[in-house]
Length: 257
Ligand SMILES: O=C(O)[C@H](O)[C@@H](O)[C@H](O)[C@H](O)COP(=O)(O)O
Image 1 (tube, protein in one colour):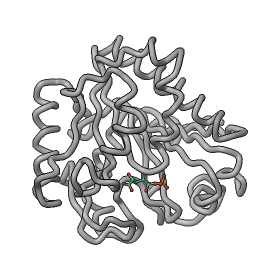
Image 2: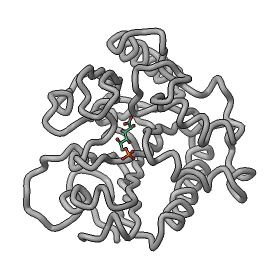
Image 3: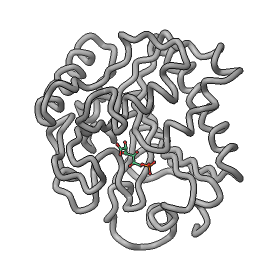
Image 4: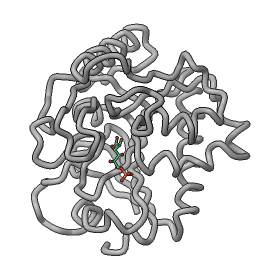
């Protein structure tokens, strides 16, 4: 299912029979975009989230992708991170390292984790400075229409309340318009201290894969993709990247559509 959303890129929705099929489709989508951007720009900037998404990347570390993807061209970032040490069980870096990064030859110097020695505010400032430098050196592209960084692909999950990254419904951070990276100290999803990309950065990315499986998010999926005329109240409804928003759902997540 594909449609064009006014003022933004295309939106596609794939409903896969099983969660396993979803992982296969997501691996192909990511590998195809990797090949496209490596050819066009000589690099592929990929933004990870935490949660269930990392498990959905498991097919990427298997044949045929394990050998065909140009891992040395990847630059890896996080859309949000919990302010905990990198070896802490709550760390999104640890989750991604254990489940994905340690299994493929991405260069350690191309993996941009937050500085876990800083406060939430300090870590957000530091991460924003790091990305500004990467924009200056042209590793991360800049959106000519918004002036915000333009990552090639963001791989996002969504919570049952419709949050994406650490942008939660009703929280003032959802309305942030200036900062690239900001921090939250009262996250309703634990742990409370996090840093997060802002909506201007999320929506300046070229491609976003929105990955949702299982029964927990059926209502939020219905609100986002059903034909309801309700105003955009959930953060996930504000996600509109420049080129394509590709939803990957399994049958359970799509059961109310
Ligand atoms: O740090 C986090 O909490 C994650 O990065 C977060 O943004 C995640 O993607 C959503 O909360 C969905 O999480 P689940 O996939 O576990 O529902």
